[in-house]
Structures are given as C-alpha cells and as structure tokens.
Amino acid sequence: MSSPGALYRPGPVPWRLRAVARIAVVLARALVLLPPRRIRSLLGAVRHGARPATYAQASDARNAVLAVSLRCSGPKGCLPRSLATVLVCRARGTWPSWCVGVRALPPPAAHAWVEAQGRPVDEQVPAEYFRALFTVPPVVSEDPADGLVDVVSDRSQLPAE
Image 1 (cartoon, helix red, strand yellow):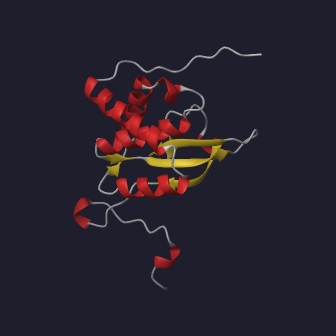
Image 2 (spheres, one colour):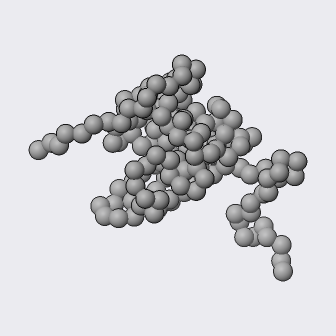
C-alpha cells in the first residue's frame, strides 16, 4: 500500500544562486559515495575561512538546493541535501553546522541535517527530535580583530586552574 505525498518545492531562486546550487548538488552526489570519516575530514578542511551562517542564510541555501534537485527534495535525500546546503553556504562565504545523527524517538533512523544559530534549518520537527553523532561546526576565528572568540571544544586544551 502506498500513501500519497508531496515534495516541498521552494519559490523562485535567483539564477546565480541556482547555478551555485547545481554545482553543489553535483559535488554532494560525489561526496555521498565516500565513507563518513572522509566526508567529515573534507568538510573540516573546506569550512576554514568562512563566517558562521545565520539561519536565514542557511535556509536560502537549502531552498536553492531543493529548487534545483528533485532527488535532494525526496525523503531519502537528507545526506546529499545537507552536503549541498553546506557547500552553497561555503561558496557564499559562510558555514552552518553539518550534522549526522539519528532520530531520538522511535522508529530509529539515520539522518543528516544542517544547523544554524543552534537549531535545525527548515526541518519540520522540534530541535530535540534528532541526536547528533558528529558535527562539522563553523570554525570560530582566533583573531581578535574579527571580534570573535575562539571556542575550545577539547577540555585538554584548557589551562590548569
């Protein structure tokens, strides 16, 4: 038995952003063939030099990806959709957090998504619905001229008290 469903299709997207999204979708389709560890290390290298993305910037990038790719719009398109979204953001000089994890509620299933400003971008579920197994967050600059503060994620790097 099948159930009817409709895919979300965003409104009009500027042609330049569409072109960037098409390239990002092609790259994302190649990236999904790699092992997760390799994807994570490649994204970790690509993110350097980008500002943290705002929710609106990440949402615009996601909508551009959905506008150019029917496969990314589908229910099993979360991995290429999230990869293409971070690549579109990176092409525009920003970086959201790329997350891979599982649903916190039954039935368990793997999922990949993008977060910006601490919340999932355009996922139609509450923020606590997913549990991240690993993320590739934006790099926060150590340069005081940027006005940003470096966040130490490894407790071994903290000075002894």
